[in-house]
Amino acid sequence: MRPADVRDVPFLERVLLEAYNWSEARFTLDWIRTDAMARRYLEEFPADGDLGVVAMVDGAPVGAVWGRALPADRAGYGFVAPDVPELTLGVLPQARGRGVATRLMSNVIEAAWERRLPGLSLSVEDGNAVRWLYERPGFEVVGRNGNSDTMLLRPAAGTRTTRRPA
Ligand SMILES: CC(C)(COP(=O)(O)OP(=O)(O)OC[C@H]1O[C@@H](n2cnc3c(N)ncnc32)[C@H](O)[C@@H]1OP(=O)(O)O)[C@@H](O)C(=O)NCCC(=O)NCCS
Image 1 (spheres, rainbow, N blue to C red):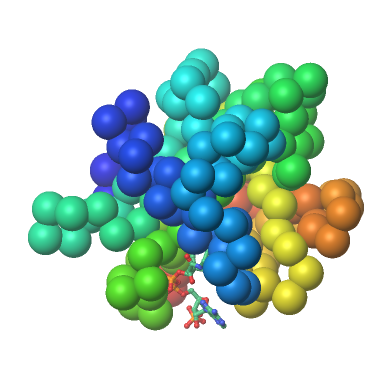
Image 2 (image 1 turned 60 degrees about the vertical axis):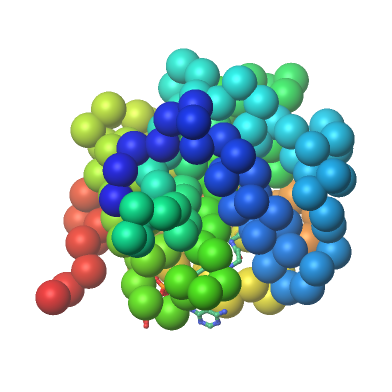
């Protein structure tokens, strides 16, 4: 696990596509690159207030989670407040089922509290089993946007349960 930086943007683009296509191949890379909403998740990353973690295996990235602190007038689907980064999470198909996402989430939550951020948010579409991965460290539903829930993790909940039991 290592912090994400500007050189990771091409990889984060692949992960963003995985997140958009969580249920089936609905979107293409070309679409991700041109859609105004999708672009918000990567344009000028990392800006002030952003954070991210990349999971590496044998020197190659296999998964990532990153948060964007977007202003209200350029909000993402899971916007809560401009100083609360909205997370995007994804693991490449060949690396799934081995705890990579669990560790990515623990790492990004720990990094957020180290930076004394007021919270982390995200958007999860109805039916995505990944919800469990968010509920476990304490994310709670705080809003609704289309067919997705907006979830928020506040520091008090996060500091209790970021680590998985051994
Ligand atoms: C969701 C995703 C990030 C999980 O990555 P992963 O590295 O395989 O996750 P983990 O191995 O850490 O598994 C975490 C837990 O979720 C469960 N889980 C993961 N994917 C699951 C799925 N598709 N269906 C049911 N359970 C699932 C695992 O069983 C595990 O539970 P456990 O710890 O109790 O055993 C990955 O499947 C992915 O990239 N999906 C597409 C993108 C996506 O949906 N992003 C989130 C958008 S909100």
